[in-house]
Image 1 (cartoon, rainbow, N blue to C red):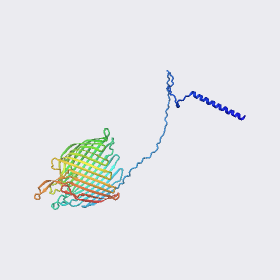
Image 2: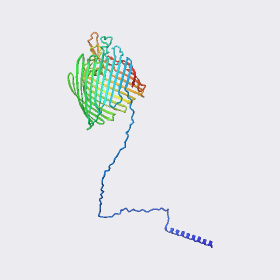
Image 3: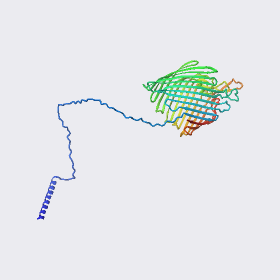
Image 4: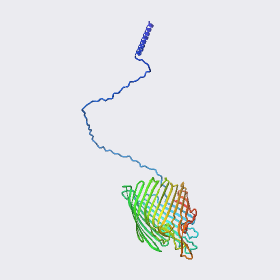
Length: 561
């Protein structure tokens, strides 16, 4: 019974399951007919886009007002302290008060250059300097050519708040000899009678403002120049000159300056053998200067009054233009000016130290001077300058040998109206303080009104200079000078008729002078140097009858304290 009951329950369970399966199969067969693979897919629907709204013909607008009562709240702010910014700069080089350069060369040639100066100071600076150079030597068939040059200088400068005062004083003592004679033939001339000594005292003072572009204040520069000159043969010349330049900066149009210059000079010349000569020259020159980033224009006139034996009044143009064409690579410039100045005994003796003390002095009148050229820099190291000058000059000075002595020892000045045309060019290469090289050339063309020849005026001169610093230990220098041929007035002497002289033109050959110098710096304070002058040993003549010494070597040392 027990097992019969369990069997009966199992059979009933199986019958129920079979019935359920059969029912499911019957339902699926009726509802779904599958012919391909099943792909579930939703049907597309369109969304209704509308907003519910109430259509009302009456509208109420509510204006809201918010009353605000402002109240000031006091606050305090204390900024933090910011420390000053410190910039690192290169240390300043140490200055030394004393610098001495001394040496000795052949022809018994001592040399000394002593400098004493102040250290850095915000208000004052000063310097003292003394120079000496002398030489003995001998030249065949000529008198004693010994020379001696002594110079002493003193400078002082004081910087005020808005202006600066400069004071300069100097003393010059130069000894030369008229050695254009044969001591065997010309027994009337001795070393004492052929000796000439120039002594000169100079004093210059300048006061100038430092607020150049301040549109409120006036710019000013006031100068005082004085010199007193004497020679061994009773010549004396004094000159006093006062000048001023006043202008004011504005920025109304193109950074312009409006101003004027004034200069007044009194000069006195006297010699025991010739009448005294006094002269006065006054200049008043109003001007305007305009400028921009790439250009500058100066417009003015120069009113000049000269009074000596007669009175002359001249008006000169004063026009200067500068235009930067391309970023300092090409700068064009030009000027249209003139001047009236003194051919003084000082100026003539500086040009030709063998001038005679009885020279005739005339004022030079440069009616017109036109200049045009271009300058600039090809690179940061290479620069150039080239242009032309043309001048019309009255009383231009030329030098001819004296006719009193048959050996034509000294020189006189002769004057003539001259049209002077000049072409010039400069080229320089500078590599900081290690190396630089410069070349300069001038070509001159003189067209005289009355003189047949432009006496002692060369038509060409060339200058080359170089400098090389090898690790601040070895320094090399070189100079090369070339002066073209010149024409001098010479005379044929007839011993039977000493008073009769036949004049002829003598052509002085070209002048070539080549110098080399070297310096070895043992320490920063001590160095040794040597200079070789006239290396080619060329006995050239700058002035007819005065050949120079040949090869010269001079060496010494420099040290500072």
